[in-house]
Length: 171
Image (cartoon, rainbow, N blue to C red; front, top):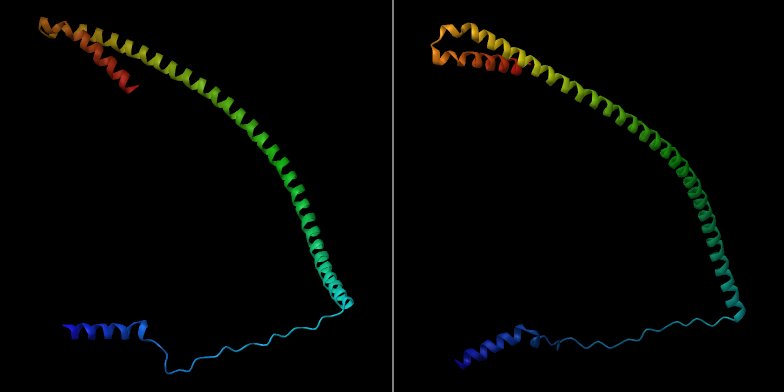
């Protein structure tokens, strides 16, 4: 058992990072990299260099300024155009609003006419149903003699109901 444990530990140690020692390779030496240092210029040369850089930045700024002025003039033109479109849109909205008010007034007039016509129609329907009921009673009185007495009394009322219902349904 102890041999198995020793072999097992040996296998684990050889397969892990403990066994990865580079004994065969020579160790690398650190090499220094030489740094080049520029010689210091005179203050006049430094000033000339700074002036050149400032002139190039000034040219770039001027070109950007021209581009910004063009963009600003385009934006102002678009703004004036949009204001004119807004006024035209306001006029269109007002005309549409007036048209809607006129249409609403006309629809109210037509609705009043329609409701009056419906009332008149139902009134005439009732009158026609009453006349049909009266005709049914008269016809029932004529036919009443052909039926025995307990049923003969119901004939005029049945005829009135039948005729009035037929007129009401078909009108």
